[in-house]
Image (cartoon, rainbow, N blue to C red; front, side):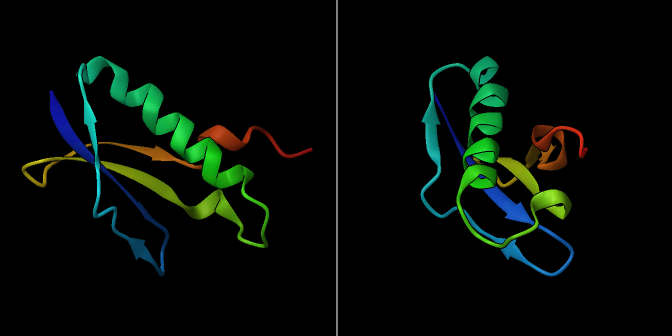
Amino acid sequence: MTEVYFHCSDAEHYCIDRRGAVIDNLADVPEHAERMARSLVMTPGVEDWRGWSLHVIDDLGEEIFVVPFASVLGKLH
């Protein structure tokens, strides 16, 4: 089991996930991260999420990968 954290940022903000999540299988982390990004994007509000990213950080503070929110938004029409 691995503890991972999901920090969010844009050019002006950096939101730190202080609780993290315990993940049994590291192969499940990308799917979990995408679900988190989609959940934030779907939250009603005025935030423009296109410039935001979700940073997946391991329990040692190392960045594993980044999910740009634009990748879960789809194309603009």
